[in-house]
Length: 211
Image (cartoon, rainbow, N blue to C red; front, side, top):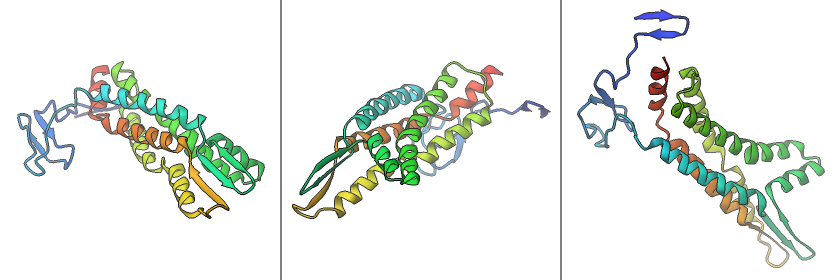
């Protein structure tokens, strides 16, 4: 095995060695196997429709993200007033009340992280399709980050659900989720499905093709 400044040369993938690993449990099989002998899951060397599914779910997530920022996330009704707050409007109101930390959390979790995920997933898909030169390790790290932050993307929906359950004081005050809550939840789910649909093994193929 020859080592260079650009990484290790002479390494071969499991696919090139005639092997296939189960994506569920990691069990390695001979290339002709169709079912995992450990978990009985289906085996395929590469998901040939991975990128199509990635783009389909990603576009759906972006479409759902638009009404999530246009329509109200929270609808508050009291004896004297009725107010509707969008995501951005809620962050602005928090700033006006000098709650800068909470405003920053709302803005980052509701705007920056979802938009960042859109760009990251799109970048991974494009880099694999066009075989752009980028260190394979960096692309794997980017994929790991996208998967990791996916679990924190529903903060807004959880907060709205908790407030709606707790603040129900009959005719005095009520808090209900708006249309944006459902749209935001759908956008998060679609984006997570897009990330899950991405076959990270394609990164190896693109890297070896460029090399």
